[in-house]
Length: 294
Image 1 (tube, one colour):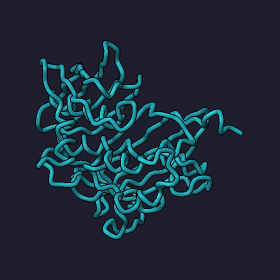
Image 2: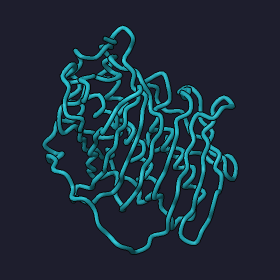
Image 3: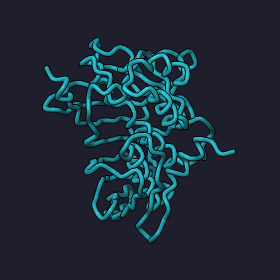
Image 4: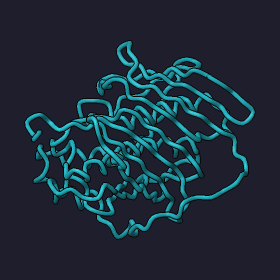
């Protein structure tokens, strides 16, 4: 019997239709646009298909240009910018209905030894002690604008076990809190030993909660509550050390600022044993609906 993880892996497995042209499958429709993490992960997967197998992604920089149509597949064209002795660079454009909807630049590197240091990992509760999404989400249903929202969120995250270390933004609407949030996540099943796949899955999850700290700072519940509207603008990730997305990863997030209708989220992803695996930065449009503006 197929699982939600099987379906997510199919979604990330882009189809090659020409040497440097790929097609991404349509994903399940939970909101009236393509989920940003989906298009970013598919674009990285397409770029990785054109890179030697001994090179893993070490960074990506992306812009969300237009709202994607969730009812149509996405075509990814890969531009082979550079193939160097140590680094390989690719540019990817995602196209729907004849127009670019997303742009990504990614760099890949062959493994090499070098100087090593990192910040100490943050304190965080044991993920096994935290409530699952299935246990927590129904208790917040009264705060959602749609009675079916809890079920929709559970369906959207069915392939990933994602657990909040503290109450999410939609738990205490109207109460500003420190602009920091932690979630633990891992795939709900064993993944193949493919660094590109683990990176793509981390990209997919990274777009789920990164702007939560912006909402927390202003006591906003988010899109599920309906007290803000918005979308991702750009997204950047740096992959520092090997990791597995089917093992617990701590997504430690914060927002240093918001202004001009935009909010900035930045984060670090640590393995459960404290290794800094990934750094993430995203800016998004976050607007208060006119009816709710003081």
